[in-house]
Image 1: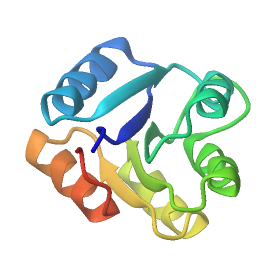
Image 2: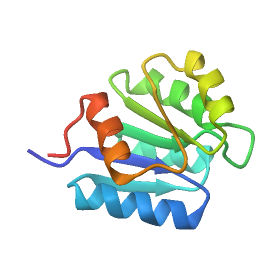
Image 3: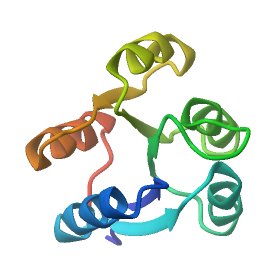
Length: 123
């Protein structure tokens, strides 16, 4: 069975590198975007099984709005939203039903637990 595809949307290069390394090491196929607009283009080419996105993205669309938009075309999308602003993330939890909210900073084990909670396997 092919590896599940994760769409990673993070505008901080250092965080994106760390998360990408964790995901690929766990057997996931990773596509990276720095903005919601870029993520929508990538998802149109290869629909992801899981979205891992920062809540606060550059441009007009945040990670929560991106998740809702992607869920329209991929209803089974697993969603992990990450945020350095915990109060902001807890407030937005209501906006994306079923999303897992992961406050930054997080450990590898916490990211892996969040991914497992989505129900989408790496391979």
